[in-house]
Length: 344
Image (cartoon, rainbow, N blue to C red; front, side):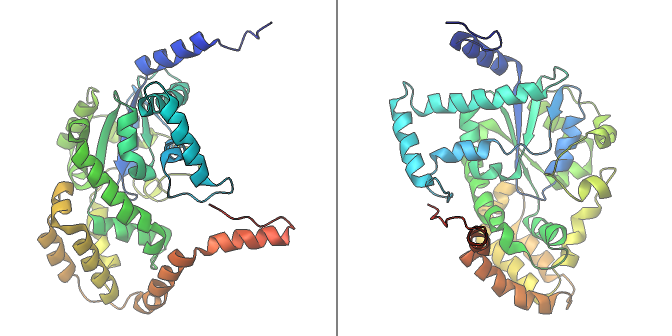
């Protein structure tokens, strides 16, 4: 039997994966959206030893093959996960073998993106918070750090960025609640593998950046703080505002959240959200519950967006409950004379 020259043998494939693992070190930034992760990515990506792209997202669907809940699909996701469970049970090292296959797949792609022979590839995908523990398990030689930001500032930035000032929190509950809970759990379970940083600390200056680079294992070059604007992140994903509005590291965004959260409905939501997070998790994140409550109480009263919030807050609950996007897709299928399907 003839074999095309471009087709590697199984042994060559195995060696290729092992070589990739030896030569490409992945760096993972775990964060909630609007936490300053794009700024951090651009600063680290300004180093000559680091390659990066906007937001890969590739590990989410692969890791979710092991999740029985969280996906509704035409192919019946739950049945698929049962099949994957059977497959994993038959592997010699079970889930470790499956993680190794995930690692080989990802590192093979990362290595192809290191076009100038960079040693490190930085993967910044905000919703990796949902699978952060699995990623830590799958990449024993990876570099990981969690980037926290004042959670109220995150919520306000979401409203301003994707809601244009109007209430839009309901679209990001998965991040503000499930994501925050998952990151805290990963931090508690894998402290020895994770470094922890706060956006506010990085804004302050060189010291925290030097610690970040040290934890990654790269020699810190202060020039990256001036050269990060040259880091190009092509594609549709990523920060739609910071890359345009901020050409240098600035503390300007730190207090903007108070203006966004000034009306009484939003202040009430802030207090309830802080209560849900709780003092223990806030300490884990590097913040103080009482101090944040005092800051909320001190925000001057405003009617801005109050009447709009009276409409959008209950509508947001209905949006999460009914998920009209699914019905819209089914209606489009009917209009195009396609069969409607059950998603499981």
